[in-house]
Image 1: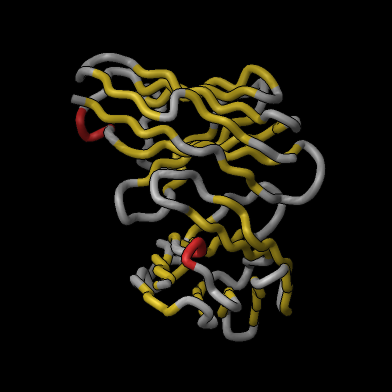
Image 2 (image 1 turned 45 degrees about the vertical axis):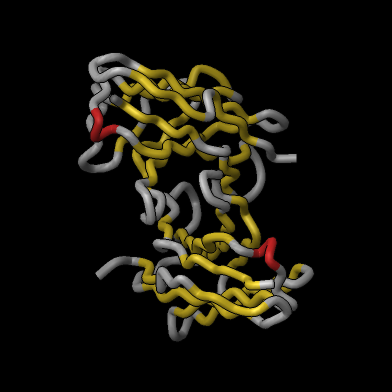
Length: 116
Length: 111
């Protein structure tokens, strides 16, 4: 159990376009989901915490108008990178925490975004 | 100073060796400690999850936490080439506090 999926697994887009990434908890309900960004040879950097039915909480330095997060249900959160630029190219990973239980986070497989 | 420090490696060991991976942290409020394994271009996979000080064993993996010295370790016995990956330590203080990750140690097990 505790499987998290992401779609797409990789995407290439042109500069200025928007890209939506989906994160789903497949076999459990997740009140809270997290979005991370990971640059090569660096650790995961938390971008925002997403709670079902409420606005996301963004980390310092993360533009909320550029990285739109929607957590419409207990199994789905989406991250939309708006007006993407080459510097947004990165590995985006979501994680989900069970509604019940301890604080374990289960990670998705990640989405590699390349902005040309 | 980073909240969680981890040697990035790389660490190369022969197959069958015992691997020791370590992290230090600075925030005494951290209560929960995790180790994740991340293969190249994949999301992290939770290996071990421990609370407070002590040891936890799961198969070939043993996690050790020493809160007095703010030191956490992961031991891998009888290492296999399939263990080659980046290992991330992580910690948080409980509740809905965010998880803080180390930078990861890249491990290579040579057949």
